[in-house]
Image (cartoon, rainbow, N blue to C red):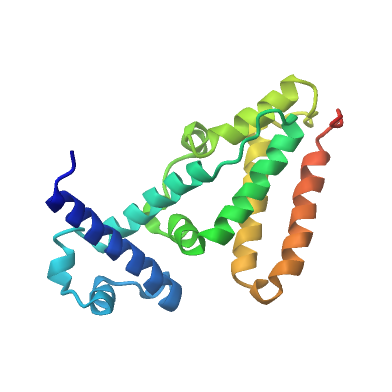
Amino acid sequence: MTSTREKRRDQIRQKILDNALKLIADEGLENFSLRRLAGRIDYSPAAIYKYYGSKEEILEAIRDDFWKKSAEHAPDISGLTPPEQVIASGHNYLNFAEEYPQHYLVAFNSPAEQRGSLDEMYQSPNFSGLISMVRNGVESGYFKLPEGYTPETMAVHMWISVHGIVMLRFTFMNEHREEFTRMAEKTLIDFVHSFTVKKPG
């Protein structure tokens, strides 16, 4: 059973994370610092160190929360064909980034996240599911890949596409978000259908 003291500690840790995200939203990740955060929540930097040992530890906690929320946000794709599954996965990625923009920016714009090889990424539970969808599509005859093109290659190209869409939507296309999103979603569908040889239904 969680003690009152532990609950209080968890509440304060969450308060720090919530305000860190608000600070990043207001001033940008590049301007995030423990001193600015402390001023926002009327704590001293020393008080924050009781809960998080560094700025990087706070960003790591935000990234962990991002991946946890991402897993919880995953749609039910059972009963869909492989092309429908991949498209649904792409739509979910776009929608999730829209719902948690600051989490997303922290997850993909922090030095600690810039690590590992492609092989390590393929094994990551955050990416391996997409590879499995593509491989299932190939094995079931829905997808035909060009010579030398692997399920991993298609999955990476899919991720590059949706990640690029998200970043453009956050930046250059921010003032034309709805129009850009419609075009981007069509691009996503066209990409998947360009590999599809067995049409749904």
